[in-house]
Length: 265
Image (cartoon, rainbow, N blue to C red):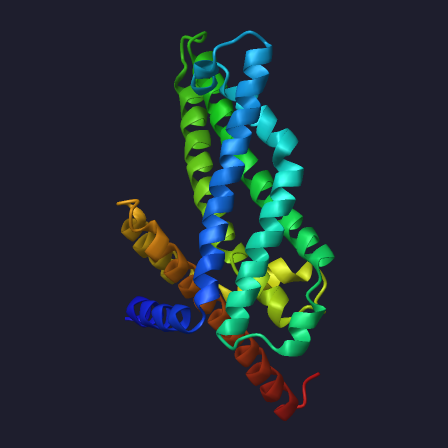
């Protein structure tokens, strides 16, 4: 029900603000352009080394990742500035952004928040291959012992721990989705506190966000539908996250009023 209502609202908002649709088209085009630029840079390095470009998809995948790491800072900054400004424009069009807050949202803090988000996601995700590599080492070690059941048990535990950590990583990422919208509502909030507030805003709503993302992902599978579905998905996710931020503000206000009524500080 909520997904259907969000889709109807997204269509109406895009019909009223036609430039938003163009902005999301530009966002999708920018993503494709940056990806092609990374591929072109990696192929150029391979040609300079005397390798065939087809090796990029095989043994030299690591080279592509190295190029991504080098180009990640400038290209990531371009992507962040463009995408977060689209979210901001969409929030303004939906009437969920106060004019004074819009003026206080500066690009400097936006980059800090984006880098903070990316670092948190990367650090958490990096633990998963470490767990699985440890399981591989324990499984190898079990082959050198007559009684390797204990080693295999430890390997199984590390594999399970890696899977659970991967789910935890997804849980955190779904919570961090609200970070831009918390910043739009509270531009004065310290950068370190914004992710915590975003996690609190998404408490109990991650499953709905996941279903919303899956709903629009399925609609994009035919590929030819992407130009129509992508703007609707962007607006629907923007409205969803902004509503969660507003609900958190209402809960905090109610709690403050209850505390004041009971005379607690």
